[in-house]
Image (cartoon, rainbow over all chains, first blue to last red; front, top):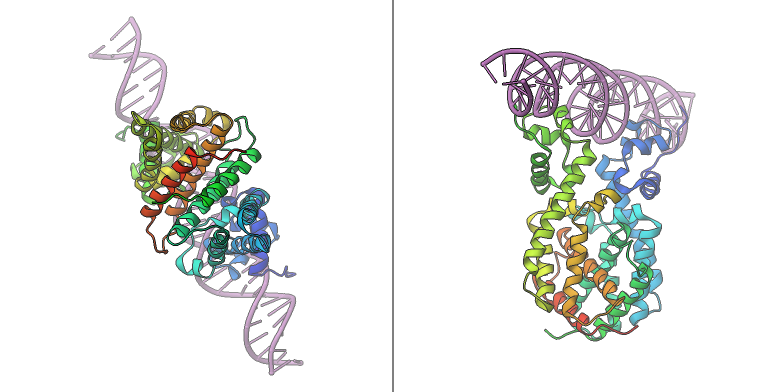
Length: 189
Length: 189
DNA sequence: GTATTTTCCTAATACCTTTAGGTAAACTAG
DNA sequence: CTAGTTTACCTAAAGGTATTAGGAAAATAC
């Protein structure tokens, strides 16, 4: 009965890797147990339940993504910062589709409060420092940026625009150009 | 052994309603059977399997949404068309969250080909007729619009920006203003 | 070196999915 | 309008996942 050395952390990490391999919603307590060569019930000493596992993976992904954004944003401003931010998002989703999906999980208010969500919001707002927007336009712009990035990544990963002519890298560049132009020239109400 | 009169269509419709009530991923063959007061196995005369049910609901939602978009777009152009299109999307998601989620289901190439996806693409492109864009900028713009609409609706429904000051209706209007301005003034490469 | 905590186990319950094969209701022909 | 065929729904069964209760052995604490 040798012990494997399970911890909530190891399970979360393994769950994140599993998510990238098979998809976030295929992450299940059973297959995680199998991966550690351990009986299913054993995981319940470390996890409250299946939902708890998913929440932990989501929080992990949010932290990891926030760390990457923070690193990419350091020392940049204006369009440079905008592109860096956007590319981190997109690259993370491509590199870690399961974790990206996890990061979109609807969290309970408590979990959300303990998450890196606040850092994300702060950093998105930091991008706008290079542009000349005042409240409440800043908030509108933050929401627009979040929508574009999330929407684009989500549609691109889902195969939303795979078959048409211009490749998605080209579109991505032009979308960033467009957003930059828009922020520099934000329309009055 | 009175017959209830199950058909794939009735199951799909009921599945769509169920999705709106309990969420698309809570839609299960079991609860659908219970809703018709019928044994689970009976549904397998009408559905290939659980995935087939979800696909049928997705196709149904895509058709319904395309119909609404078509109706809203009739006789409109320019910003009018843009706003009409966007509002149909957003309203549909608010009114039928489960169906909207279903419409995002990743379809197999065959299912996608048989879906209303083509109509959606065509109608999105039709919006741009009121603006002065040529290929390949049109394609870039189509992708941007899709990203914004989907991203916004998705984040708004997920509670992404619920706690901050300006309400989301105000942001929505300003985002539409911004997109209109951007399309009228699309930056050269 | 004993006591305690913790990790992992077996066992059991409950639910969802899917297939195989049967019965009776509904349709179809003559 | 009855005989034959189709088909809607059923029972039975097997296999997977989630979760809880309670036990044994390994690790840790004193």
